[in-house]
Image (cartoon, rainbow, N blue to C red; front, top):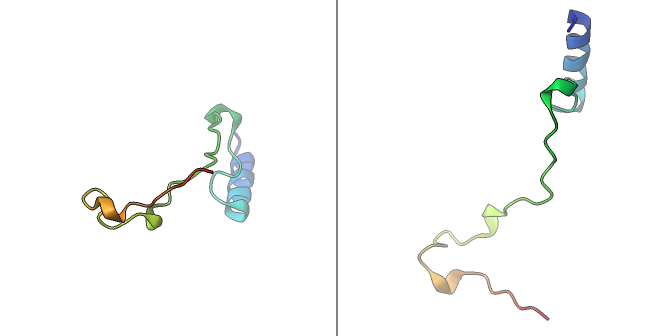
Length: 58
């Protein structure tokens, strides 16, 4: 790739966020639609069963 093209990619990524624009040869990794909510778990989630969240299905 030419230096001007790389500079244009870098400028776009600085403006829109890391990896917003990548060369096609880099491949495509789909975004995950969910994230684990670690802040919602009990600090002792492996040792205290009474602190686990309760889920009820209707």
